[in-house]
Length: 236
Image (cartoon, rainbow, N blue to C red):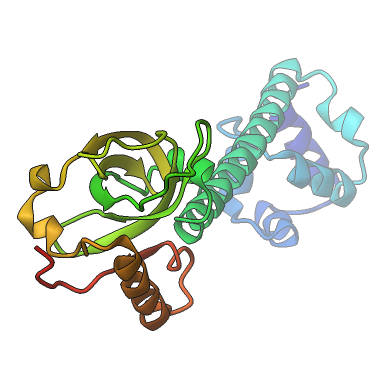
């Protein structure tokens, strides 16, 4: 016997009208009518309540209506799939938010993080190099002040390159945050004048100026000790 027929049969045996049964299930009497005509069918939670109200086991209630049972089984499987899909989307969303916050708050802190951080753009800056006759092959230049733009925004970077030629004591540096992808030694006269206006000819003097700007520019933001602005001047 179909579920719709079973429902109608056992509702009447309990002397319940469609409206009375609907009130017990907190649904409309139109919903009961739709079930009894076979247009729709109750979900599994309502089926359990129905079996209790009508005093019939769930197995007996569904016995003989293979089509409806298959539909209910399919619905249950789809609900599980949807549930897992929703959980997956939520986890992915939270992961993206977490990663975004991490990348936003961890800029200019680690060169390998900066290398793959999509929030940081690749820049090309210019840097004076210190006189260091003891620099050996395989040793990096440490905390070099690289002027990144015409506003004096600068970054302290470490990079390799060996001893610079005597006539090329400046470096053109391509970097993304703290990650340096390549450098090229250049002479001062090839550097745009607007960049040179932030560069002392004496590297030690420039380093002192950078420390002052770091001190006054430190607002507690991540990476601010490595990324700051220099003051414009006439250092030609």
